[in-house]
Length: 490
Image (tube, rainbow, N blue to C red):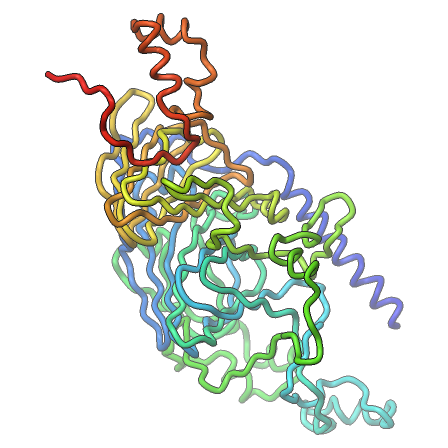
């Protein structure tokens, strides 16, 4: 019997991995190409707010054309201390950035073992009791009551701790829940990739809650300014069928449905205790292991051989730490990226992210995104941003500030200049290895073009062509200059 169970589980995991591998292949994205004739972009703040007992969920209005062009939605969640975001699953991948706070993330991966134990105890769950034999098993199944008095440590799947600066990957169709066990509010922003191949419904995000009766929003159905009361998925099933399926009393099924539960999607859980592994006083963390964990060595998922099993797949990475920077200019700032090279499962979702810190008055060189749309959320500070379309028209020219979001479509040229207080942002991109092409600096298109071509193209002298090519020796992040450059006086 055990051998048969192991074969069934192995087949289940293999089938799931096959689906994931299929998803990881280059797929035609479902982004609305006919919706990208954008005349004007806007820096936007959330349009809809859905308060809960212990939190707040905010959505941007995805009816705006730039959301349709990029095939994304965007949300911000605030979870108060001791707040629990109820278990749910979604039809779309969600890419999350932790703006403030810490917490614990639970992701239920189908077919994986319950490898964590807590110090709490649970009633015996219906398996044969030691020493009872067949008689005890039959007795334990009658009415779901007798035979349930033996207790054992609670077991569950792996828990993952996260902190400020982390990105989290929430996979579609997987049950997710979040708990804020810290002392300050937990604030996250997230891109919902509604055009991802994993979503075979329409271009609208949907959350399927296993508990509570949350208010929903974000999709087009929630964009009429009205709060819609949704029930959890158990509410639609017959009570007796559920009681038979769970082998419990009907009164428990009524609590499962919670028809009078008005707490929303995030509830207060003061007495919730979660136990995660930590180093004890008797053990010391080896230096090599510390370095590997810091840099993510040995934790990568591979499609050919699976160095890391699906059950222990890496689903987070910190991109807020200075030492993790991929681009650094001590006079201008730093950029940290996360892509499928760092978190290999991102290749299945075709997503990546960029965390930017621009110092006072620094400039991110004008560039365009070669293979991705970009959804930029302002974490702190402010910047002036200009975006230009293929006709040479400015579709955006304004200052963006903390809490605002701007979507820059693929190939549209963009330049960012930080304000006096600097500029911090996170940009979610719709490609697992997003690439940009800068127009200025050491890595620019101009630097790769012969001077004679520049001279003929712009009708300028050789000296002026040389200035265009070599006026900046920096790469992507450009420091504030002494303003001694030549300016033409009208």
